[in-house]
Length: 252
Image (cartoon, rainbow, N blue to C red; front, side, top):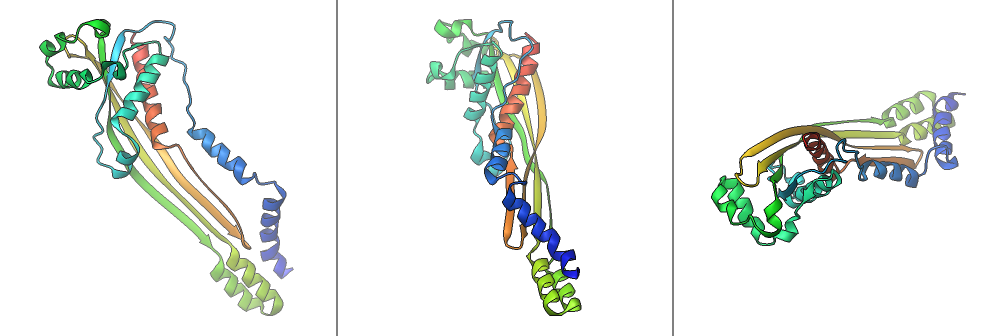
């Protein structure tokens, strides 16, 4: 009976892993992956055609090295073009502008309407707005972790009981280890809309969201169970772009 207090729960956990009452690694991995997949949203004014616009490469003002390795301003602009198109805005793609894009961006950043006039021809003639998406914040703001290691308790219990019972209790107790860690990111995105003729700001907005990155691992009598999952940084940025586009969609 003494052995049972320590060993039966451990063997039950092992049997559960092996019998399938705990989902397989593949099933658990797919559940995590589903959370990171693209999630389309329904824009409320999608039936109303929006003005023609150009998405300019924005700025990433965070100096977080991890974020900078994963996300570029072109990634964000690509997300913006796709979501604005889904919301039924007219999109003049950056690839259609070619080398002219850098000159347009410079003119917009300098607030020079005279420089913009020379571009108002051809495909660019119908453009009403410029849109930029800037990352103003990308910080890992919290980190927490905890673990359970029953090796010490197992040794003490084994010593107190002694004999074969004590040896089994000690072995079972020392095999139980659990590690649980989590970290939280906060990412902030600003959008700006500028008049294509004057470069004056038409409207702007800011959105923040948080993302949790975590991992958990458990080992019992040599059988381990672990999982790690997260909404990736690019998925997080895309969802913030969706919020910005939804805000613009309401202003058609």
